[in-house]
Image (tube, rainbow, N blue to C red; front, side):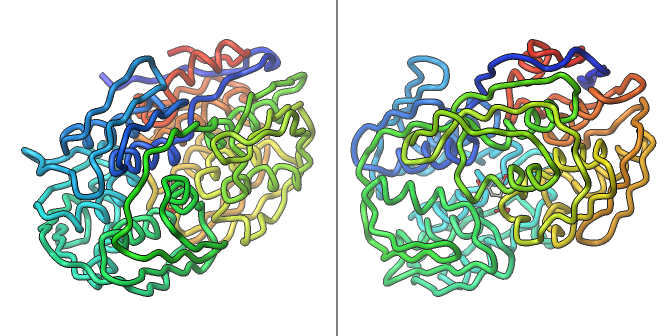
Length: 433
Ligand code: S3P
């Protein structure tokens, strides 16, 4: 039977919370540590299903990975030329990041491999990576409609390219850069809007010479990686649900400890502040090369905004949370330029619009956005579409609902935020598993 939550108003939200490690950083840390010469330790590794799937894949590729304690991994790197052919298909689970980055890396190996994923990942577009990789000389087969499995032939000599990304995507950029590490000459990527730059920053930390600035990255093939230790900051995208929850529940005050504040991730912070949210940064520090700070959030009346389109890539994973903030604001909120939301773990524009309508709101959907008309929220049954962020967003919305909200199919929350429900209950959410 599918797991579900029953959620409804709880107490004012109070307390100090430790949010789990960043998903994007954890994927990359295990990949780059695996490719490095020497032993790397990763602290703060996200014990989510997505990132554990990536670690399991590298074990299958011959990399020794120890887990001395939860959220710590010791990775015995095999060097860029040390991966071993797997004995069967490699399962990326729900993780688009895992599959797309691995496509770039495995396309450059001397052996063949097959990448598979769960039902949601098996519907997601992969031509955005296979096309540029093919231009570099890779051979990768998808299904006719460009979806997984990815059958990677391997054994091809790759050549560097200069690639202008048609869509802003850190996953596509990263796949090309990883292939570029094995390609002849130089590989460069330019983006229509800057996206998260963890691949660039972390490759540099692993000793790779890489030139990058917002919207562009360039490296030379044939370089090696040198082992280094990685401290993973708390995931801003997971913190986002608590930022919105405390903002909309009267009497709330939460402290979220040492949250990663990479500017390419914190668009929601700016959007919430434009809406009138009361969020203060305290104890700023640098954690593994990334800016972090405690976020102290207090309840505040929110007003609707037109979300600036320039913020969209910097909050691409935060729209489910933003929709809930908008639902509880004064005045409509307009989202534009966010068509990418239709090809995430679910069609997030449709999933949020339908769910909020079930709770009694008017939401006008457009191909690349929506207008959310706030109002009193009622109860109802919400389909999460097996999408972790849709499920968590409606657990937050329920904290302001006049009735009980049943959120269906919530197991997928473990991909990015294991323990979300216990943490939420502990600080005051009305939420039963
Ligand atoms: C990610 C990039 C984004 C984001 C995803 C993680 C990454 O995807 O939505 O959750 O780690 O590079 P796109 O690159 O497809 O926008």
